[in-house]
Length: 431
Image (tube, rainbow, N blue to C red):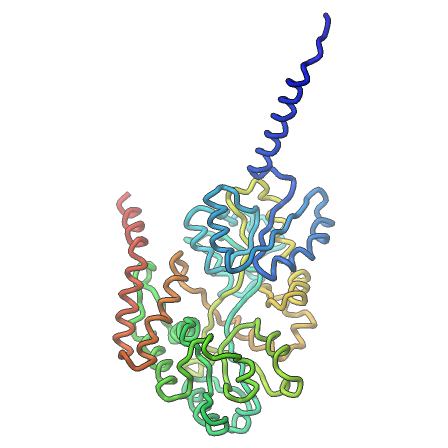
């Protein structure tokens, strides 16, 4: 049989079709690279860990894409809708309920059950809970974010305090005693009016649930949150806190260095910022402390369990490799190295035994506080609700409304935000 050569045009068409099929397959997630999306500085740091991960996992190539925090939420949602998410991504743990609710994330219960590298007991309980949604695990804590008090230890010492007060009454009295030691027009504590965290944490310390048991209505008028709101608003009315948003303050670090601010409830990123921004001669003048509690017997007060988690997307076709990456990034030694590179506090308890953290007296308050943290309500609407807390309490801070009026409006606004959630749950009940 005589074999005839295929026409060049036919060969070109076949080759083109092959390339197209290959590109289509890669576009659907069959690329040889495991794709990880890291947010902000963390994405840059993970990129430096790629060689070690690939060395330990021959045949697995890791591609890291760095996403700015400002656009991360929208880009992740767009990727999910477009059916082109990464295999693994860093998610702010308040985002987890939202992405889990729309079916974007892989249920990790089975992976956890078979893992020898990850166990719930290795993590702070309150932080672990932020990764649960409707009884299932959708993320593994990566690094933690909570709030403690940064304060001028020298000014408190002059006011008669050798250590930071542990209960609210003593805390407020310390502010009153510090104020005469400050420059004219200064305030003992900074509580930016556009931030929801401070008031919310005071409420949680009082035992407030924030939402009802089903997460369908606000519970801000309940006595625990109302007591916290009265304490909080009272600090402004007494002139102990300036009525300013964070952007109106100017340079908060400079004001702290000048003694115009003595206390500031803020997060772990400021360990590095205080060390960079305050002059060398003032580094011995500041310290950190866990949050005071309404009841001195229940010290410390409750802070929130923030930070980022590692999640696998349900559409990933490389879930075994994705879980290997999560296990790698969860190792205590890797978490310690990650802290050295980024300054992000590790979620795994064993990593706190590393020399850098164990010897850091100013990081110790965070270690104590992490034993008493609580997740925020695990509903997809929480971030919208959180901003409403700050907005609705500002009229009471400025004296234009009574506290009870502000809380009534807050509950009403939150109920409106949760209207769709109530409808969805009612439909489930009817089935």
